[in-house]
Image 1 (cartoon, helix red, strand yellow):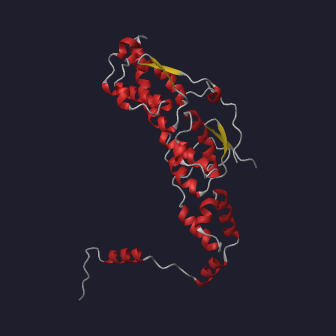
Image 2 (cartoon, rainbow over the protein chains, first blue to last red):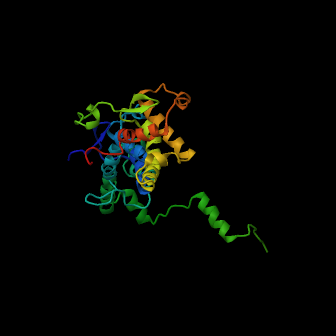
Image 3 (cartoon, rainbow over the protein chains, first blue to last red):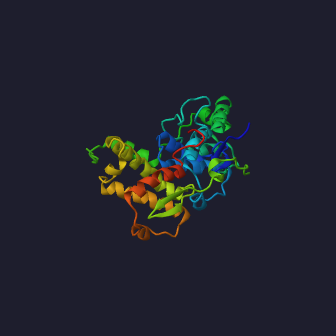
Length: 177
Length: 124
């Protein structure tokens, strides 16, 4: 499958499927429906650095980039987030909130020993997330099966426990008879 | 991997100029450094100019005299930013002392808008 390209400063740049490093920037701006110049610039720079991480922001700010190049690049980059389904007429990502990339990466590291968060930051794409989720649905990791078999339920976090306790004593006083 | 550049119109065309303070200034295709100021300012000022022209029955020269200070400041900012693309050494203080008429500022807008990329040559 060929990698789509965008034209920036009169040059064609490939934009592979974005990784969390770019999607953390691009997806929230798309969900917010931002089309102002500053947002367009952020989106295009992030998209461009997917295949060219060596491009730094300083020189980029000096490139001759007409506004229409940024506007034309937007739908391509939106598709490359992986969150916009092919064939959709919409130019913006469809979810109402950006994915929790930290949680997703933590799950991948947990279920795929030997991998690191830094690795997934640049290696994970949304289609990979969906494929792995489907694989884990059909063939759950052993740790999940064992936890289910043992009836394991995670302990509430310390903060949750305190909040739960406070609900019993809404006035903050503990009365003893 | 860097793919060879397409024959993009903006690359090979001669650099257009604007006339300010009676002098011609080249305005190459603007960079984000200028466009982050110029594009929002153009989008703010151009509709006002269009409305003024319509209200004046096409006589922009007369109506331009009634622009408020804020609009004039925006026009000045647009022009100065555009000039710094080819003349980064031009300071705002120096620019503010140049004898620039409001009609020169308005006349420069079309070129600056083009160089900012507000009009896609492939679509227009």
